[in-house]
Image (cartoon, rainbow, N blue to C red; front, side, top):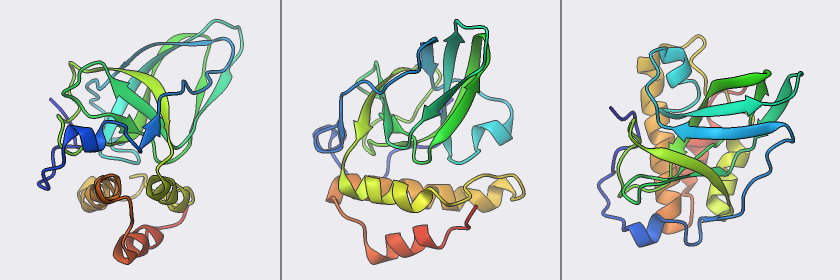
Length: 194
């Protein structure tokens, strides 16, 4: 079962959204001692994990070969590319620091979709971390959202779902048009501060 990131209705094409002018394919740096072994759009049963900052997520299996915790900064703009060409690429819009404990463990990363015309993330999709967003309007979205509280700590999910959907639609619009409208900017700036 997929969560979020379903297709919108504007009829964009895969060529519009598959990376051309949106992100590069440079491998982001992974801290020494860490290995990412698997990235999937897996099933999460804890709603607080699933929707903590977005309406889609990836589960990332990370192994720490050292005897100490390692902080892994997953920067906004990191792009997760699916093995399947029918699935959407994903990006993180707010920097997240994961404290990776020794051994191999699974961590949840809140993400948003980059390809409105492709399939929503589903349990069968495998991903790899390979790319960094560079489209100016996406960078602008991420800059605005860095100081915003997108979590559900004290807000019912039913209240936040329209907010997550609106953010997703703004991202898709940015990818398809290359710009943000004044209404998009106003909405993003009006989200609650951390």
